Image: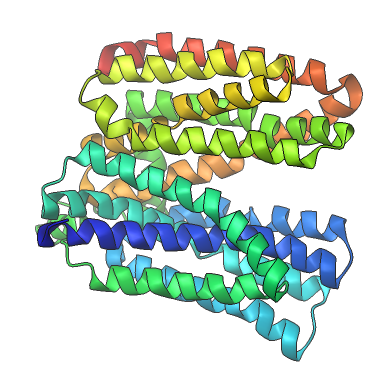
Length: 403
């Protein structure tokens, strides 16, 4: 890697460290709760509560990225994340954990993640400009690196818990957040959003209108609106298959290791698909790529819904992840090209808020369906709904005409 490409290394190092930290904490919190407080129900409630802050804070995070600056928000978010993560072992050591303290610390910690994630994504355009790297290739590298973090993070947390105790992942995660902050501190690229504001070319909306600008931009752009709605619906249908349906299936079989194999192969496929986005974008039109991903996703989930033997189930899961992998960098590329630089943070924040708001409803519905009609019928119904949604999205007029 040449000297000119050092910003890419710094941004992706921050992306990897922050992702590892978040993934480790996601495993460490429920483990600590069950070990110290002996309550699986409380562990579930804590994780559920931690998923709520991003729903409301994401639009504010986007506004901060556009108005304060991408580097500043990323650094501040990581430092605050490190502090909130450190608070858990410190409170446990000196005061002891109670259900209320765990609940509050988990919620506070979740407040800072959306800002850092949004800021690093917004920094992609600045980094590509500074280094001369193809924007689409960098988008794929960014999403693939984030996927690697979420594959390795849980395994690293489990290793630390086994070797050094339940609080050790929190110390490691805090250190990773601080490394991420240092990497962005060393990153020397411009800020297209702040540059637009300095030239007087930025959006002038203030107050509530400024905070809601990301939602307005998404709604007014037919292509981004249609694509975002389609992905939210697909996520609402798909996520329960991973978190509810497959969990119930393998729990009934008493095979948690098999569940781990399926989820790991799916994650590996998604990571490879994201890394391959740059290569695909140079060879396929965006319309062809989108249709390939939607059709491939639909074709992969159908055999999974039939609950075949583990080797076939894991193979189908790999291809499901592989075809889904390029979608995130594709959406990121479209936002970079269709949204003014000073509004991109708020658009990313609006999308994140939508993705946090709707899919949990699908999980509730899937849980009810599994209890009432069983795993097999629920999985097949969800798979058919996903196929219909994916095909309808691929044939929709905005995606056909504007991609």
